Length: 445
Ligand SMILES: Cc1ncc(COP(=O)(O)O)c(C=O)c1O
Image (tube, rainbow, N blue to C red; front, side, top):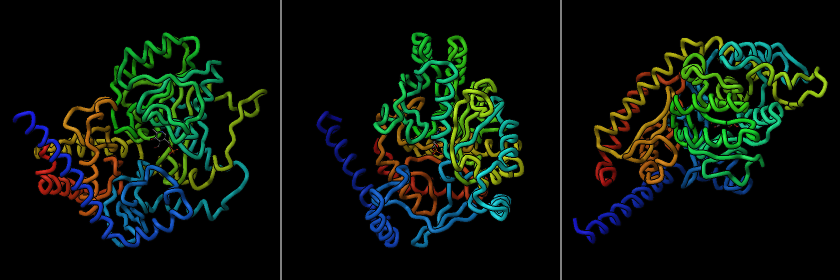
């Protein structure tokens, strides 16, 4: 093709992608009058009609009326197989009888008690038994809070203020480095390195050995697209922090569901501190930070000069009671292993579906956490997504919704235990169908 012909082909391709997005949005909007109406009403009270940024997508976001098992029904009456699993907090599905019973029983005992209960002891014991690095744990209301507390614990313990984190990292609304540091971030002194770049990260740690108090890392970068950390990269972080006296903090808010002992168990790496969240509250609000006893004992309120850690709802009975039965009666170590294997299998099948169709999508992830990326090239770090085309993912997302399958608009999925083999097979067929119908669009790489 001549240069002029190539340029004109690229313009046509770009135009057809934009047009496909516009048509898919229009089709979505037409089928959801009640959703639109509620969005318009919400805009009068909530900025942009939104109180949780990640849920927004154009032209106006999905609004769910109810859910059961692994199914969601929107306010316009459409039903979807739920592959998103509440961004990984919904591991148990929408109506697990064991969890519902635990919550109802806890409520029947009295809701807000203003005192310790037995429930938090049960859950703390189960969490310490489950994750090798956690000798002592404290509960919070969210993963964000858990990370903030872990950083404060590390800074107080080491007497050093600097934190090493990673470009593309997400540790909560106040600790996001997805496009560099966010203007709403907590004002910590943060040094950023590239994910999976061992030399860069270890040099940063060694060069600032006297001032870096901890390294905060997701063993799989979650929000930036389920990009697994290379085992050698994570092991090098362990080694560099041990040598320099900094603490290694694994943010396992998303990944703790991996295998019997979290991703750290799979990797055989023991961080000094670990943060948790999501499903561990049994579907109710939750966060936790824990680790080496000597670091955590700073918070023992019986000690002179103990660090404070407040939170009215830290031991709320719904999260404590549901979390405990979830971890001990439902998501046992054996179930965690088999669910992780199921996710690994789906990821491979999905990748094969894209490959067979010659479509420009990659699938990354670990176990039951996976993400689809609109790019033909391999994804090892957020930088590899620079030339991906978000329009292709939006068309895929909206087409799959139309066929009754819900994933995150960014292509993220966190498989729940409620998903059946039939629903997963149906999802693969739906993806295949979209790829065939959209062959012309997806083929124009
Ligand atoms: C890795 C990671 N850390 C922290 C958080 C923040 O957790 P929360 O939304 O409960 O504040 C999230 C949430 O998605 C996460 O994925």
